[in-house]
Image (cartoon, rainbow, N blue to C red; front, side, top):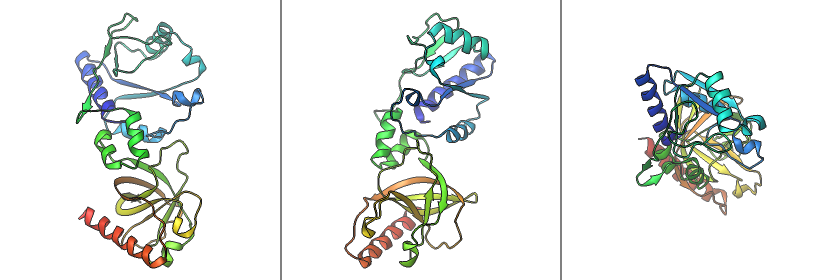
Amino acid sequence: MHKGHKYILDQLQAKAQERGVEELLISLWPHPSVLFNRPIQLLSTYQEKIDLFQTLGLQNLIFLEFNHETANMSRNEFTQKILIDRLGVSELVMGYNNSFGNKGVEQNQEIGIPVKKLDKITINNKDVNSSILRNLIKEGNVSEAEKLLGYYYQLRGKIVSGYQIGRKIGFPTGNISEIDKMKLVPSNGVYICEVELDSIWHPAMLNIGTRPSFNGSERSIEFHIPDFEADLYDKEIKIRFRKRLRDEKKFDNIDNLIAQLNKDREQTIKFFE
């Protein structure tokens, strides 16, 4: 979900109101790349999509199972069997680069129902699409991604016990696991973020990486909430990224690491002030 999708949904809701009918958002699941064994990392998980759509006040949402039968349907077969007979669609609103059926569909094409294809939109002279957003997040550019998403990029997971290294040096951390395997995780580095615990959002600093100062090899995600002490294990957590602070770095000694962590903490506190 990004601002390009939001534009489409605004047009969909306006058209439904104009016609005096209910709007229906149709999404495919799983992502078509999964069916064709192409590697893909998602900006939104299944539950995240539902949560995002709910914030927009849509009347109806359906996830169509994308399988080989659906993929092999012709344009007219998909229109008649799925859109008209099954879902009762009376008009179709589509993004500029959307398509369905094995030959696609064009603006105002005769397929049994009217089709409205929308123009491409840009923000600050930049295209808005999922590929661009994936690249921004892979680079760790979460601030720029937020401008195109219209909200802060998020991860969800569960807090588990770690190596307790942070606690020993004065920076107790929560380690995050059980993140959806298909969810795109930003590049390694240190970020300013917010974490939601028990429905309360807390300012935090977060590290994604391999703990090179301790000769780590496995990638981990851990966060520190300044001036906060509580038993966090086994809690469900949401993270929203606000700003990338720096790359992950290997320090020569613990004192240098602690000095840098203090700078990171000061920047985090100042950011939220």
